[in-house]
Image (tube, rainbow, N blue to C red; front, side, top):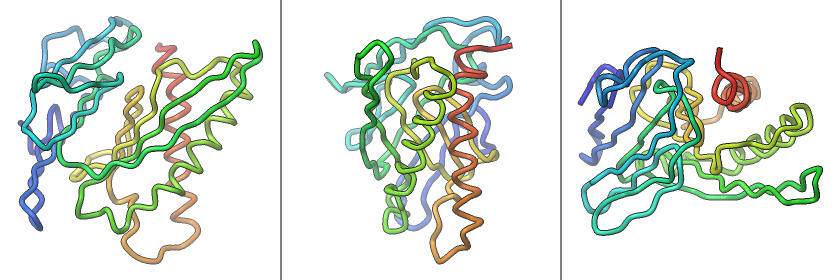
Length: 211
Protein backbone atom coordinates (compact mmCIF):
# COMPACT_ATOMS: atom_id res chain seq x y z
CA UNK A 1 0.00 0.00 0.00
CA UNK A 2 0.93 3.63 -0.50
CA UNK A 3 0.73 6.51 1.95
CA UNK A 4 1.61 9.10 -0.70
CA UNK A 5 -1.59 9.04 -2.75
CA UNK A 6 0.11 7.16 -5.60
CA UNK A 7 -0.99 3.69 -6.62
CA UNK A 8 -3.21 2.09 -3.97
CA UNK A 9 -3.51 4.45 -1.02
CA UNK A 10 -4.40 3.21 2.47
CA UNK A 11 -5.94 5.52 5.06
CA UNK A 12 -6.72 4.73 8.69
CA UNK A 13 -9.38 7.01 10.13
CA UNK A 14 -7.97 8.38 13.41
CA UNK A 15 -11.48 8.83 14.81
CA UNK A 16 -12.70 5.24 14.59
CA UNK A 17 -9.80 3.15 13.27
CA UNK A 18 -11.62 2.18 10.07
CA UNK A 19 -9.44 1.49 7.02
CA UNK A 20 -10.17 2.95 3.58
CA UNK A 21 -8.46 2.19 0.27
CA UNK A 22 -8.54 3.86 -3.12
CA UNK A 23 -6.36 3.92 -6.22
CA UNK A 24 -4.89 6.90 -8.05
CA UNK A 25 -2.88 6.09 -11.17
CA UNK A 26 -2.49 9.27 -13.23
CA UNK A 27 -0.10 9.73 -14.85
CA UNK A 28 1.84 6.46 -14.56
CA UNK A 29 1.21 4.70 -11.26
CA UNK A 30 -0.95 1.71 -12.20
CA UNK A 31 2.35 -0.20 -12.38
CA UNK A 32 2.44 -0.01 -8.59
CA UNK A 33 -0.57 -2.36 -8.52
CA UNK A 34 -0.53 -4.41 -11.73
CA UNK A 35 1.65 -4.91 -14.80
CA UNK A 36 0.66 -2.91 -17.87
CA UNK A 37 1.68 -0.49 -20.59
CA UNK A 38 1.26 3.03 -19.21
CA UNK A 39 0.65 4.74 -22.52
CA UNK A 40 -2.76 6.43 -22.83
CA UNK A 41 -3.35 5.45 -26.46
CA UNK A 42 -2.90 1.76 -25.60
CA UNK A 43 -6.27 0.61 -24.33
CA UNK A 44 -7.71 -2.69 -23.19
CA UNK A 45 -10.86 -3.97 -21.49
CA UNK A 46 -10.31 -4.66 -17.78
CA UNK A 47 -12.11 -7.08 -15.50
CA UNK A 48 -11.19 -6.90 -11.82
CA UNK A 49 -11.73 -9.37 -9.00
CA UNK A 50 -11.08 -8.25 -5.41
CA UNK A 51 -11.08 -10.22 -2.17
CA UNK A 52 -11.78 -7.83 0.71
CA UNK A 53 -12.47 -8.06 4.46
CA UNK A 54 -15.99 -8.91 5.56
CA UNK A 55 -18.05 -5.77 6.05
CA UNK A 56 -16.28 -3.85 3.30
CA UNK A 57 -17.78 -2.78 0.01
CA UNK A 58 -15.63 -2.63 -3.10
CA UNK A 59 -16.22 -0.51 -6.20
CA UNK A 60 -14.48 -0.40 -9.56
CA UNK A 61 -15.11 1.02 -13.03
CA UNK A 62 -17.76 -1.59 -13.81
CA UNK A 63 -20.71 -2.80 -11.77
CA UNK A 64 -19.74 -5.34 -9.12
CA UNK A 65 -21.25 -8.29 -7.31
CA UNK A 66 -20.11 -10.15 -4.19
CA UNK A 67 -20.07 -13.96 -4.33
CA UNK A 68 -18.07 -16.44 -2.26
CA UNK A 69 -16.13 -13.65 -0.60
CA UNK A 70 -14.93 -12.14 -3.90
CA UNK A 71 -16.09 -8.94 -5.56
CA UNK A 72 -16.30 -9.46 -9.33
CA UNK A 73 -16.72 -6.52 -11.67
CA UNK A 74 -18.15 -6.23 -15.16
CA UNK A 75 -15.59 -5.92 -17.92
CA UNK A 76 -14.92 -2.33 -18.94
CA UNK A 77 -14.87 -0.91 -22.40
CA UNK A 78 -11.30 -0.51 -23.74
CA UNK A 79 -9.70 2.15 -21.52
CA UNK A 80 -6.22 3.38 -20.61
CA UNK A 81 -4.47 1.96 -17.55
CA UNK A 82 -4.35 5.30 -15.72
CA UNK A 83 -8.14 5.54 -15.41
CA UNK A 84 -8.76 2.09 -13.98
CA UNK A 85 -9.82 2.35 -10.35
CA UNK A 86 -10.69 0.43 -7.19
CA UNK A 87 -12.20 1.92 -4.03
CA UNK A 88 -12.71 -0.29 -0.97
CA UNK A 89 -13.72 0.00 2.65
CA UNK A 90 -16.69 0.70 4.93
CA UNK A 91 -17.70 3.80 2.97
CA UNK A 92 -21.02 5.55 3.51
CA UNK A 93 -22.78 5.05 0.16
CA UNK A 94 -25.86 6.78 -1.25
CA UNK A 95 -27.62 5.87 -4.51
CA UNK A 96 -29.84 7.54 -7.08
CA UNK A 97 -30.51 7.10 -10.79
CA UNK A 98 -30.62 9.09 -14.01
CA UNK A 99 -32.87 8.45 -16.99
CA UNK A 100 -32.98 10.05 -20.40
CA UNK A 101 -34.93 9.27 -23.56
CA UNK A 102 -32.50 9.10 -26.47
CA UNK A 103 -33.06 10.18 -30.06
CA UNK A 104 -33.90 6.63 -31.13
CA UNK A 105 -36.67 6.42 -28.54
CA UNK A 106 -34.80 4.13 -26.17
CA UNK A 107 -34.31 5.05 -22.52
CA UNK A 108 -30.82 5.40 -21.08
CA UNK A 109 -30.64 4.46 -17.40
CA UNK A 110 -27.52 5.29 -15.37
CA UNK A 111 -27.23 4.10 -11.76
CA UNK A 112 -25.72 6.90 -9.66
CA UNK A 113 -23.75 6.53 -6.44
CA UNK A 114 -21.84 8.82 -4.10
CA UNK A 115 -19.68 7.86 -1.14
CA UNK A 116 -17.52 9.18 1.67
CA UNK A 117 -15.97 7.70 4.79
CA UNK A 118 -18.45 7.01 7.58
CA UNK A 119 -17.18 9.79 9.82
CA UNK A 120 -18.24 12.40 7.24
CA UNK A 121 -21.72 10.98 6.63
CA UNK A 122 -23.48 13.69 8.72
CA UNK A 123 -22.04 16.36 6.43
CA UNK A 124 -22.52 14.54 3.12
CA UNK A 125 -24.98 16.51 0.99
CA UNK A 126 -25.53 13.81 -1.60
CA UNK A 127 -28.73 15.47 -2.84
CA UNK A 128 -26.81 18.48 -4.14
CA UNK A 129 -24.11 16.27 -5.64
CA UNK A 130 -26.74 14.22 -7.48
CA UNK A 131 -28.55 17.36 -8.64
CA UNK A 132 -25.38 18.72 -10.26
CA UNK A 133 -24.61 15.28 -11.68
CA UNK A 134 -28.00 14.99 -13.36
CA UNK A 135 -27.82 18.53 -14.72
CA UNK A 136 -24.40 17.74 -16.14
CA UNK A 137 -25.57 14.52 -17.77
CA UNK A 138 -28.43 16.45 -19.37
CA UNK A 139 -26.05 19.12 -20.65
CA UNK A 140 -23.46 16.76 -22.13
CA UNK A 141 -26.04 14.51 -23.75
CA UNK A 142 -27.64 17.53 -25.39
CA UNK A 143 -24.34 18.87 -26.70
CA UNK A 144 -22.39 15.71 -27.51
CA UNK A 145 -25.27 13.60 -28.87
CA UNK A 146 -23.42 10.45 -27.77
CA UNK A 147 -24.84 8.45 -24.85
CA UNK A 148 -22.73 8.05 -21.72
CA UNK A 149 -20.92 4.77 -22.48
CA UNK A 150 -19.66 3.48 -19.13
CA UNK A 151 -22.75 2.07 -17.41
CA UNK A 152 -22.92 3.35 -13.83
CA UNK A 153 -21.64 6.67 -12.47
CA UNK A 154 -20.17 6.51 -8.96
CA UNK A 155 -18.42 9.43 -7.24
CA UNK A 156 -16.08 8.76 -4.31
CA UNK A 157 -14.91 11.50 -1.95
CA UNK A 158 -11.72 10.08 -0.47
CA UNK A 159 -9.20 11.13 2.23
CA UNK A 160 -5.61 12.34 1.74
CA UNK A 161 -6.17 12.87 -1.97
CA UNK A 162 -3.43 14.72 -3.84
CA UNK A 163 -5.53 16.02 -6.71
CA UNK A 164 -8.82 17.84 -6.99
CA UNK A 165 -10.44 14.86 -8.68
CA UNK A 166 -9.85 12.11 -11.25
CA UNK A 167 -12.04 11.11 -14.17
CA UNK A 168 -11.98 7.33 -13.76
CA UNK A 169 -14.89 6.13 -15.94
CA UNK A 170 -17.75 4.89 -13.82
CA UNK A 171 -15.91 5.72 -10.57
CA UNK A 172 -14.78 9.34 -10.29
CA UNK A 173 -12.65 10.17 -7.25
CA UNK A 174 -12.60 13.55 -5.46
CA UNK A 175 -10.74 15.03 -2.52
CA UNK A 176 -13.00 14.86 0.52
CA UNK A 177 -12.53 18.58 1.19
CA UNK A 178 -15.46 18.98 -1.21
CA UNK A 179 -17.64 17.67 1.62
CA UNK A 180 -18.41 20.84 3.53
CA UNK A 181 -18.38 20.42 7.32
CA UNK A 182 -19.82 23.85 8.02
CA UNK A 183 -21.49 26.77 6.32
CA UNK A 184 -19.69 27.83 3.14
CA UNK A 185 -20.17 30.47 0.48
CA UNK A 186 -22.05 30.03 -2.75
CA UNK A 187 -18.67 30.23 -4.46
CA UNK A 188 -17.65 27.00 -2.70
CA UNK A 189 -20.71 25.19 -4.04
CA UNK A 190 -20.00 26.55 -7.51
CA UNK A 191 -16.38 25.42 -7.28
CA UNK A 192 -17.48 21.89 -6.36
CA UNK A 193 -20.01 21.85 -9.19
CA UNK A 194 -17.29 22.98 -11.58
CA UNK A 195 -15.09 20.05 -10.57
CA UNK A 196 -17.95 17.54 -10.83
CA UNK A 197 -18.75 18.76 -14.34
CA UNK A 198 -15.09 18.97 -15.36
CA UNK A 199 -14.61 15.29 -14.53
CA UNK A 200 -17.85 14.37 -16.25
CA UNK A 201 -16.71 16.06 -19.47
CA UNK A 202 -13.68 13.77 -19.40
CA UNK A 203 -15.96 10.74 -19.76
CA UNK A 204 -16.23 11.72 -23.41
CA UNK A 205 -13.01 13.70 -23.91
CA UNK A 206 -10.11 11.84 -22.33
CA UNK A 207 -11.75 8.52 -21.44
CA UNK A 208 -13.81 7.56 -24.49
CA UNK A 209 -11.59 9.56 -26.87
CA UNK A 210 -7.94 9.65 -25.79
CA UNK A 211 -5.09 11.52 -27.48
